[in-house]
Length: 287
Image (tube, rainbow, N blue to C red; front, side, top):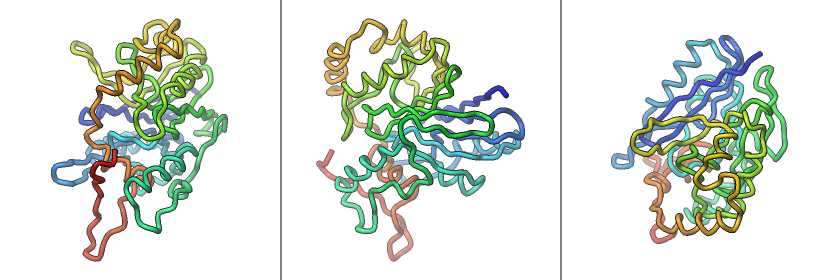
């Protein structure tokens, strides 16, 4: 059966959520769903996730997997909300344990927080395979942006690649978060670019220049020919010098402090305090 991918764009965070299925009535996977968060008020909402939920219901899909490509720094995940609605297993790369260990210290999290990935339903390792209905996907560990980044690949067809590569006119992901590394990202990107040229690459974000609408899909061939950072002919040393210099000019994502402490918990808020309220920490002079 032919794969079907529906993409939902959240302009507030420039995030693409993808739903993979084989058509009406089939099992599906939801990749990188967004929970809306207003940093000024501290309020969450499910407007973005409800659009995904409406699609699942409209097409009578059965949610088999909720997949994270990494612990996002720019949005909170809506995976727990969608899991409550539809079920399914929440999966992420096994490198999440490294990210949890790092940020447990940065946030000085409660003693009961464990950095073993047990908050998630499944931890994927490199080259592992798993099924979405009749489709068999392969996991590709692609660190560099963070230690936990993975791509979900249907060989010869497509890959959900998270924040490793962007559209050709945007380039590549930053590498200056804790645990990031530009040389590692270069090697991860080359693994993706070694896939078949016609492979469709589904992105987690797009930051289009003026005059272009946001897009969540490109191809290996387009990236190899035109990516402004990683096209064929760009060597590792050249890329690392460019990426590190560029990263020094970037400000932190607007939601990094609330997002990471929620996302390393598989989307759960920190435990409520005696008054029943959940609180997020803001570490001062720590990042």
